[in-house]
Length: 243
Ligand SMILES: [Fe+2]
Image (cartoon, rainbow, N blue to C red):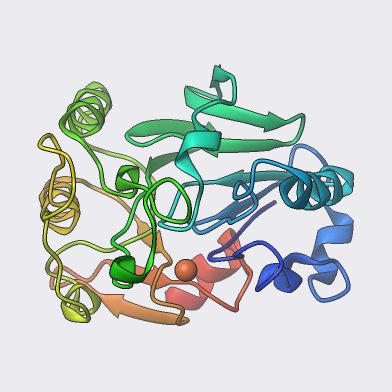
């Protein structure tokens, strides 16, 4: 079984994957996956707060996978060991918790998932760098090149896409003004980059988070783009629902 959701933000919104609410979770095991499309939030203080939530998540029966959003402590995240796992690079957080790195393609239960985290913080003027805001929230040239190389290897064909923010031609991308001001020189405009991918890639469903809405948008060539927030959706179920 594979379930997907987004934006758990540590204690703020993690209740949705608590088996008290997410009853299906009790039927899962370590070979089943719960994927969080960014703003996991449990890599935040690098100390007791994170430990509490990671300890709790470790007791749950499934394996938790997340891509990064714009509410992760990237300094702490990058300090976790890097491993090859199911075809792509991860940070191993715990025995059953992995961070799926940007531009990597993973094989999960016979399906391929292209992961590309990151997102713009529209409130960043109120946040402090390395305290509660990191420029790493936006991709750099190396990560984008890595994505292109990996997609080239699979002839630009995957089953699913996992991103936090959206591609430029998605209506949500217009919601907040974005600019690369204040990001490093090698930063790449994320919406535009994802748009390039979207135009070229063959995929079945694109999943994302960030906008705190449960919503489906269809691209002009009738591909579903699923925005996740409160819902924890089962992959096969959502495929059926979208048909
Ligand atoms: Fe969020």
